[in-house]
Image 1 (cartoon, rainbow, N blue to C red):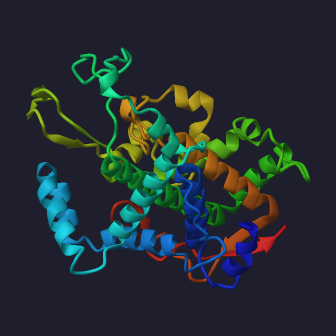
Image 2: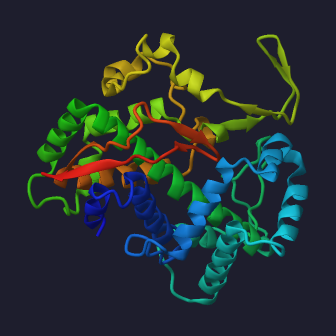
Length: 361
């Protein structure tokens, strides 16, 4: 079904960015919450339209969105204002949140269980009345704490976050990968050769797909180098200071939010060499990885609070790339921006998408 979208890309009916959005939304909606999105078959799918509008609205830098970043401690005020405005004008965020709340209520009423993210959150709930303690659960001061039952509001908020983050970041990463492959045809050819090697004819649907992908070194290099050049979720790589401290003469008070300067790190010539603007997957050979600081590559953050969706994003993205490049090669469209132009919102996305031409192999 996904491969059937390629003629639309070639005919200019949509960009590869839009195709990836439809694929990743259907994936996270089904795997995460049992939500039957049909965006691959219906371009006007209601869930897809509202997800796109949420992300698009962040690029317009609405005043409440900006104030939320500037004054996070006043989050209750911004949420209250949003709740009032929802009765004045339509907001896609609330449509999605209401949809998630409905799914959660229905799931709690049913006896059968699904294997998905929502079910994990539901079955991990702990009833405080049982007076039991999970010694593996501690707070930031290493004090043992009890788990508690999550409210429907908390569950719907987390589901909404996972839906938007899992849909948009993965699709944008794949769009940047396709951009680099068409402006670096030698990389595209080398990657296709690796795909052909690991997936001979009629073996793409092998049950061992996951294990095969984990052995594809060049595919992983392409994935990592793309995210080095385009750490699209860098605006959320931040931590809150828990205790007042001084770092290199700078006093950081308790409670302050510290934003990592990911782009400067990813383009630091001391770490990556003088040609940081070039796309060179070989930066991520095993030998070269060992020479760098473990925090030199931060598209998913780092440490114990690294992105919870890292493995799903990698697996989903790599599977899609293998499927696509097994059957098609790609060349730039006349409308493609080279170099690519980006716009910042909740993430950093291609301003005009990534228009390409698909050629059957």
